[in-house]
Length: 107
Image 1 (cartoon, rainbow, N blue to C red):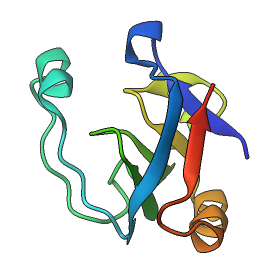
Image 2: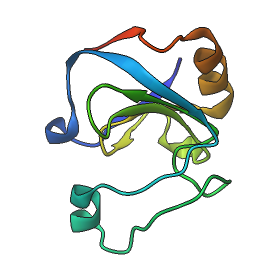
Image 3: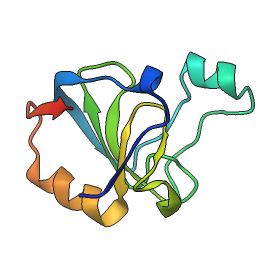
């Protein structure tokens, strides 16, 4: 699937993790480091403005997710704060095929 990737090497985590939780219609809370970079960020409920899109798979690494995005300009670019973003139809398909506990390798 085409994805977005972290905006910098410092935000990039590599190695093995696993899917520990899945959510349709995720809400979003910016991390402390995100708020440091942009103090205007705040909690967002599920919906069309939510940066996690329609589906999210939470990894065993805290604050790292595989999720959708409503902002399709981010796909194919270094644009995330560490997460792997996919087009909403792609994450919906991957979400349905991926059970909790699935191993994920980020290279």
